[in-house]
Length: 312
Image (cartoon, rainbow, N blue to C red; front, side, top):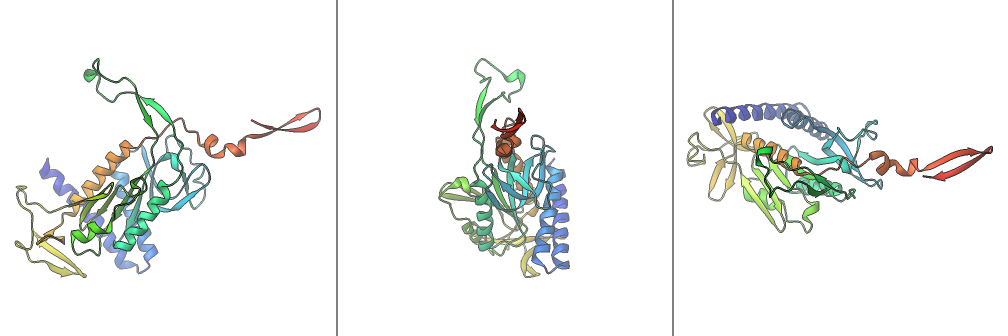
C-alpha cells in the first residue's frame, strides 16, 4: 500500500505546487495571488473531505450579529443550515454551523502567522449556542456489551482553526516553530499550523509541538540530508534534487534536511478530517429562531377593525 500511497500524494502535491507556482508567476497582485491560492486549496479539500462538509469563503457571525474577520476558507454544515445569509456577494456563516476555518498563506513569516492567529481568534471568540444533547454509541453492534454507554451526553463546541502555508521565509524548522507562541487562551488559538516546506505545529496549552516532515528513503530507515545531497538555490530557496524531483530544505539541528511536501499535505488532510469529526454541532439549533427570532417575534392581528401588536 505504501508503494501506491506515497507516489500518489507526491503527484497530488506536485500538481498543487505547480498550480500555485503558475499563479504566483503570472500575477504580481498579492490579492489576486491569495484568492487563487485559496481556491487551489479548496479544490483539493473538495476532493479529499467527506461530502457532508461544504467549503466556501466569507465571514462568520453569531446570533448577536457580531462578525469575524474575513475568513479564507470556511468549512460548514450545509445539510442542517439553510444558507439564508449566503445570498449576497459576501457570504455570512452562523458560527453554530461552522466546523472550521482555515487561513491560507502563500509565503509565511512571523507577522503573517500572527495575522492569521488574529483572524482565527475573531472566529473562536464568537458566542456559540450552548446545547447539550445525547448521541448514540459509535461501536459496532457486535462490540456492544453490558458496559457500553448506550447514550453519551455531548455539548456544542467552537469551530476549529487552522493555518495552511504553501511556503515560508523560515530557513530552519526551529524558527518556524518559534513563530507560534503559546497563547494565554488555547481556546482562541489555531489548533494546527501546516507549512509545505517545513512540516506542522500542534498548539497545546503553554507548549507548541513541532513535527518536521522529513523525506525518508524507501526502506524507511534514513532521512535525506546535506550529508547525502548538496542543497541548491532555486528562485531564492534551497532545494535538494533527489531522483529527478526537488524538495525544499530546512535546517533541523545540525542537519539541512529534505522536506517531504506530500507528507505535509497528507498530514494536513488526515488531521483536518479527524478534527472535523470531533467538532460537535447540534441539529436542534434553528437558524430562523436563533438568528432571526427578534424579527419574527413581532406579530400583528386585526381585531374589531383595529391593528393589535403581539409578541410571540
